[in-house]
Image (cartoon, rainbow, N blue to C red; front, top):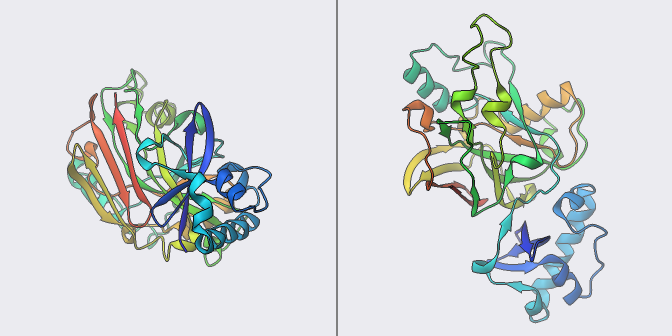
Length: 317
């Protein structure tokens, strides 16, 4: 039976919840109601530290819930009253893949009259990633994000987020998905006018500013759920959409990845060890604001939806 994990705010404290067949439960209260063995650390971050064991216990909890649903009434949460937080509260490194959807690369090439590589694998070009700061950038589902004061060109980017569940070092592409704990929806908010430091000479190696571009408070909305990888048949065939104020802006499929999830994990793990709680944002499809010069303003509402993973809503204030 499918389940999804989430983190929510309970009177100022982060607690872990579990969603099963449309019902939302406090995980700790559910375990107590079913008289099951508690976890040493109930946070999703803590569960990731021994994900194999956590999955076995979570499976037992779900089976006990199915067998005795009448015992779980005290753990039920009203969905409309849940104040979602980012599923991860203590993430590791957040890696972001750049230019990783064929349709996005094609759209950017047209918009800026550039000849961009549409098949980098065939030309021997490696994947490339930037690093997005961790805890300070996270925001949860239905959480407001303050408009960053340093930008006038704030953009949206719907992304499939991959959460690492075990140490990965020099793993093969064939084995790479074994190291995934689960998947989530993400929105890689980007300050487009801060990628280039305008006062710096165009020939300078110090001209680019990826921190200003990608890292600010609330720059990485994530959630609402961590969906275990066992419930995702393939991360390479998921519809991914983003609406801005209910207008569909991005409408694609992860089959348009230039480098799939497994290829990205294999590549990153060849450079450095990946750890439980690390996150990979796997790129965004066509339809971002930069393609048309349309950018976010205060009051705008974005919804990211990925097949089987849920919907992530963010308001800029």
